[in-house]
Image (cartoon, rainbow, N blue to C red):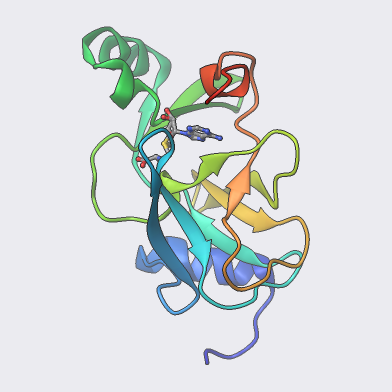
Length: 156
Ligand SMILES: C[S@@+](CC[C@H](N)C(=O)[O-])C[C@H]1O[C@@H](n2cnc3c(N)ncnc32)[C@H](O)[C@@H]1O
């Protein structure tokens, strides 16, 4: 077990080393609609750093260019955010084996929150636990926005 550090320090360590908590998290296939998801392999405490949403950091112009070229299934991996007065995007469409890109949306009862942290002057998006998460629970956050089709779809 790694030594106890603050959630922010923990996040920075994982950002810098580009590592995921493979000892605490696991990827599982859920179903044909949701695809894969990220699950707690052991308990996670409220406030804890969970995972970075890792990908290419690109500016708004590059984001628009990629959006016009990508299949919608890849656009779904583009996370836009504001930083220093401008729009930026983390493009996680390339499957690099990282865990953050596999976290699904839950706008009603999310157990994590996405926060921006700056590391060496570069913005990074990280998920932190909103409450204690039990072993076996799916890791989720509120994607925000209104354009998530699965929120209104009724499945048989
Ligand atoms: C960033 S990816 C998450 C990982 C994805 N489940 C996978 O297997 O690659 C976002 C995509 O996951 C699916 N997704 C996320 N949250 C969902 C939910 N609550 N219900 C159904 N599908 C969801 C949608 O297809 C969405 O475009």
